[in-house]
Image (cartoon, rainbow, N blue to C red; front, side):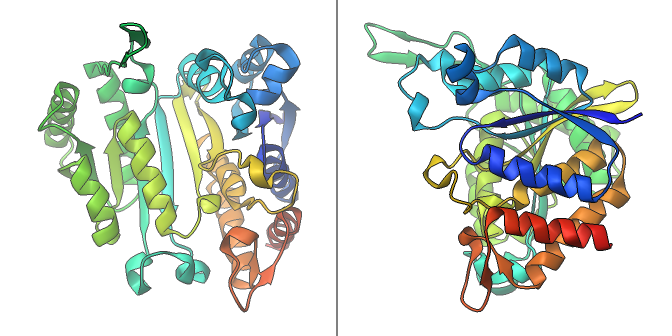
Length: 357
């Protein structure tokens, strides 16, 4: 029986890159049905809300979700609760209990020169495991006080929230090089002190994984000074948002980085929402300039984490590398001596490589 995948293409370049991910999955002959739904600004324009109930219902019934991107200046005038980023992404993560955001950052050899770091220093292979449904992004109250002159956001973490994301990070570390760095601000924040306490307890109970602690400001510096020291970085919501974007740029472009937002198992499968790290990039939407690789690699993560199809995931990753090794480049990673291609042309090339594998 075919798997059921919800497709939320969203805004800006979201529909363009999502279409290429689906193209590659079809070339793989992955047995699934795709069902589309509105989200973000497109949903607001159609229904008056960035996360319609029909979209949420579809996601609850699906076995996985493919998301493009949401938001853009067009909707900045709206009440904050109706803006796509706040009104769609945050409640979607909360309602689907997508507490574990997994963001791998790996330098592809063909794009070594695209990295802002020099030479072999740019060769990284790390994963940021970010807690996604707690912390300051979900803090209460979110309000302005004293006639709009003071703004308040609270940061709250419970032991249970920290324990479940830590357990997921240890699982991922075991599948890699068994090294984990927990990032916090324990010298200042009480939530970070609880975070460090819980992670330390886990390390004592799971000594097959090497664990160390690092303050977030030091981690931001170390990612530039010596990024190869990192295997798995475990951290809270806001720190993970910032550090994963920093790590992604070492690889050369945000257009290369996929992500998975994972929940607990459903009927023996890990439910997940899969999306590129980049935003909606409305300035290049509809021009065929967007890089679809992040969306395509997000589909590969879906095969791995939700459907347990490591072979299919590897085929997609190998196809991406083969297309890049052949010299094909979208505008964001174009360099002298390579061939500039459009969004769909890059998708076509990767799909062809997948089909030939």
